[in-house]
Amino acid sequence: MTVAVIADIIGSRRLADRAGAQAAIDAAIARVEDDRPAAVERLRATAGDEFQGVYPDLPSALRAVLLLQLALPDGIELRFGLGVGPVETIMSAAGEIPEGPGWWVARDAVESVEAKQRRAAPSARTWIVGAPEEDAGMQATIDMANAYALARDELVGAMSERARRLTYGRCIGRTQADLAREEGITQPAVSQVLAGAGSSALVEGFAALETGVTV
Image 1 (spheres, one colour):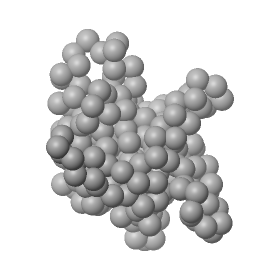
Image 2: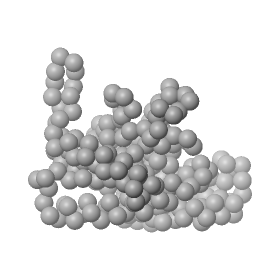
Image 3: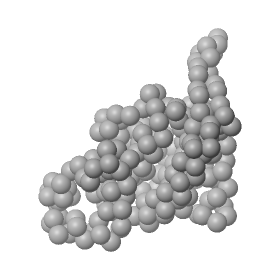
């Protein structure tokens, strides 16, 4: 299984500092890959407001997307289309061109999540589509992953920037005491922020995707 990921910036035309936003996204991508290396091809900016990357499997892609959502500062958001299927690179005079079913359905996934934002699920940021050749078992996995992603996006979308920082830290195994020192607050205050944001569900879900072991 290979997963192509297309991410685009939400409301990019309304950003007062487009270059600053790009730099913040690049920094967040680098941080995620430093903390939890997972990508076959790290997300990188392409034309317009898009980023593209490739992951070896669906759990890796879902972990990376969650950490990236948590790492972004207030005012900058991405939507993610995950395409499960083969990918390849075609060489041309203009350079490398991503190609293959994984990319085609990743594009479909981006369009799907954007449509969901406009209708029944405004907090949706992530959607997954499988290539037509994927078997019924994989499609069932994708359906369950989409249900998980919708619930996960709802929690992340309601978080403060501090809650996202703390949740990120817990996902990668940092202790509440360490996070409290970094934030300049008490450990009980960290616990209160995490509890109020529903972070424990995200942390447990991340651990299940990563190793199956509680963080």
